[in-house]
Image (cartoon, helix red, strand yellow):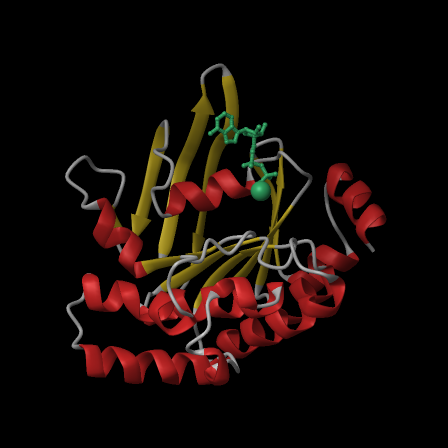
Length: 240
Ligand code: ADP
Ligand code: MG
């Protein structure tokens, strides 16, 4: 589904990603973990072209999306993203947040959009919040709306950047449950997370990033019981 070859990203003098070559297969759930500042967000942001890679290639379903002719907007439609701080549209109702992109971009009719929106809100357990504004929601509810909104474009992949890091502890689980449900439907997902239990249970693979390099790429059981590099061992000792 996604393949990177020697992906590098620098900001001025700062080399953040230093040649990442890996792939995500269809239906796979990849947990991306690693110390703060190691480049996890930058990696995800490169994958849907929120950042322009400095070097290397990214293929999405076989198409080189780092090629100059790429239509960035069309890539973003097919690669959904969910952020730590939700980024809902504050002046739109919950339902409108979910249906806005499909009506504007895919030209779905208002009736079909409404039906799609209500179906997605049901999926994340928020049908009864359809007509309220985001400011009236808890953090966990906001994030579930953000997930419904990402799903509304029927993406091939969803990239999650620390989706539960801004939540009060009692709300983490409800969001993880929604993500777990999505994983079961076969959605392809990359999830930056500090929830080690979730990563171990739900992910098919773990990427451990360290200083802009993919230090480990392993099955969760292998990674969590027998990490190879010292940095991963240290990291896990602190996290578990
Ligand atoms: P992580 O998500 O793993 O915590 P990031 O990908 O956010 O790490 O950041 C990696 C490094 O790149 C950090 O040193 C950060 O300060 C730097 N960085 C990220 N985005 C930018 C940017 N837009 N401009 C300059 N430096 C950035
Ligand atoms: Mg980050």
